[in-house]
Image (tube, rainbow, N blue to C red):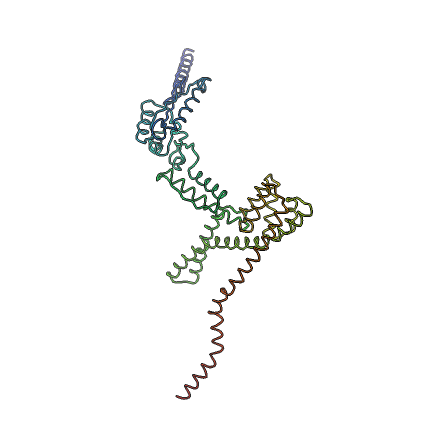
Length: 427
């Protein structure tokens, strides 16, 4: 019995030790955290050329004061140590080391600036100190694989640049763009995003003009990459089968890569050009149909509905898509502007702008359509006259290099043979 009780007391003692050790471990929260306080650090330019951003630090400090006044977080008050780095990377490094090594903060919160955060993010990751909501849009702060302790808050600079590009293309698609940018991560990534946005938007417009509405620019890029891989692979197989010389195989491989990469874009551009020409050619018929139906008493939307049912081809598809957008809640102006963005031709531009201005100013739609019909007929006549004037020039080169040589061969060859026979006979 005494042995049994001694064993029980020993077990209770061990359990008490384990509980005490567990309680002690639970009290070890790490740097900057106690039962009553969570200490976090920050660097903000309260002075210097970017001192206006100091308002961010003041607003965040006021927010944490409000949280503390309501009892904090699970009974703990949040203490924000916010230091002025004057937007100077050396000062940022100095203050950050002080916050981490002397003040023992739990994390660095919402430090502002691309150059300043660039000076400290590797140090913080090496120290395994969280760098939360860094106020910068640089791509390097969104790399959880290499720098898992850094979390960016600001939207990516490249994304913002692409948004600006999209707005420019929507508001003034023919504008010439000049860019002045900072020669650092901030400026370079903005410029990269702007270029990508302009290129992606231009490709999206090209795809829509070709009628490929379901194909996104990224999907089309995937098709181009696939063609750039498959065509050279087919050439290599053909070269090995035919046992071509290595030099010819190498030259053919280069040509196959170029052909695979450029052919999809060439096909899309040719398709969009033919489709826009077809839309431009069919537009006068659409306007005549709208004039007849409007003068018969229908509204503009009803006339568009009848035109969409009567017309086939590319213009009919565009009319049906425009009506579908209106049925989804877009106004007539928005639907017409989208129509112009998908099929931008001179005739379509005149049509859409006249309709939008008429809707805005309250002008009779019948008068607008009649004037448009007259203008479209004049434009079609002028286009026909222009093509007629260009026809002789286009015929000139086939005439000189194809027809005339054949005529010379047919007419002069007998005379040449007779001359040669006479000359040979005389010899």
